[in-house]
Each structure stands twice: as structure tokens, then as C-alpha cells.
Length: 90
Length: 199
Ligand SMILES: [Zn+2]
Image (cartoon, each protein chain N blue to C red):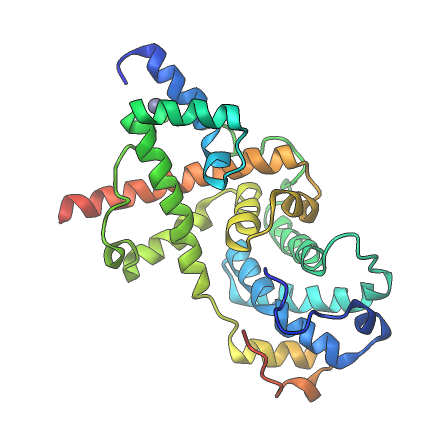
């Protein structure tokens, strides 16, 4: 990272890593980034931990639930009390 | 959110005013809408208000639903607008269409965190305390970044659907998504670096 031109390259490529982890980066930029990743440990860490960050947030969000009383009040507000027992909870 | 697997919700039936079909739609999407509202507002009462208001508005607007976007994108759009109205009461200056919101500018000058914490065991990455930290990191994002992140990465909408739900360009979605993800990564890196030192 001490070589300024190298650091510049890192800054420039960071803008592409979000699309890279989504698999939507253009083939040309993808090849350029992967070539850089083979030589640059720092950027490799950034890409790995970015992927991990997204998956950790997703894991936490999967545990969110709709409390039963919130569902019951929602059905009541919508005048759907007749259907509140149909337990189609996800 | 994935469209429900069993029987897809029938738009025809919804438009006819079929209440049982409407109840099915509520059950298919309410968790997603509530989760989005909770993570946008961090307040259970306000999130519940947004949840109720979203389906009340949907019920009223169904006759005019044209099906140009999917049902889920349409519901998210209503919910996002409701949540933003709540936030605007707290922060009147908030606007989604403005190019750069306060605190949304590039974080140039800040050192990126280079800590290789990705290989820590799951039990540590997802300890109770770590989960709280993850939730707080999402809460700390500016609203304009947070809503993009939630729709794309938590609810799983495509870039196009996210743009459609928010009424902003796909380019703006991509830029905000990048910033949101990098900020979260930095926050998590700060946290896990300390945990690595301890072990
Ligand atoms: Zn690099």
C-alpha cells in the first residue's frame, strides 16, 4: 500500500466491488479486479469481509418475526377478523 | 420478498374485493413490511402504524393497481413512503431524490479497515452481542442509504425493483448500495477487530 500508484488502483477498484459481489460487474472490469485481487491482499480482505458483512446482516434479519398480537391487530384494523385464525404465518 | 410459493396471489381476486385473498396477501407480505418498517424506524409502535397504513392504502388503491410492477414492489413502495413520512416528521429536510444527503458523501480520507475477520467462527460472528452490533450498524446508516440497503440486501429486491420502489434511478441505487455496504463493513470491522484482540 506504500506505493501511491498501487493505492490509487485500490481506491479506483473499490467502487466496483459492490457490483462484483453481486456478480453483475462487466466482464472487463471483473477481469481487471480479479487480476488486482491476486496481487493485493488488502483488497482481497475488503472483498471477503464485504461479502461476509452482507450475509451476516441477512442472517440476523431472517430471525425477525411478526409478533402474533401485531398480526391480530392488523387483521382487526383491516376488518379481517374472520380470517385471523387461518394461520398462514411464514 | 419471494412471491408466495403455494398458490400465487390472484390480482384478479384482489381487485374483485375477495377478502379471503386479501387476507392471504396480508399474511404473505406483512412480515416483510413490518421488518422493513422496524429497521427503518427502530420503533415498534411506529413500525406497526406503517404496517397497518400500508395495507389500508393498498386496500383502497387495489382497484387502480395496474400490475406494471409486481405486487411486492408495489407494497414496498407504499410502505417506504409511509416510513419516510414518519421520518420526515422527525427530520423535515429528508429527501430521497436529492443526490447527496448529509452524511452520505464519500467517506474519502477515512482509512478503510483492513482486518481479516471473515474467518472468525460463526459462534463469535453471530454472538448475541455481535448481533446487537450488526443491528446497530444498520440503524446508524443515513436513511437514504439504509432504505436502499434494506430493500436490496435484506428484502432481496433487484436493483431495478429497488429503484422502482423508491422512485430513484438505478445508478443512484448502485451508488447508495455501495456506500451503505462499505460503511457497514467498516463498522463491523471495527467491532470484530476488538473481538479478535480479545481472543
Ligand atoms: Zn488493492
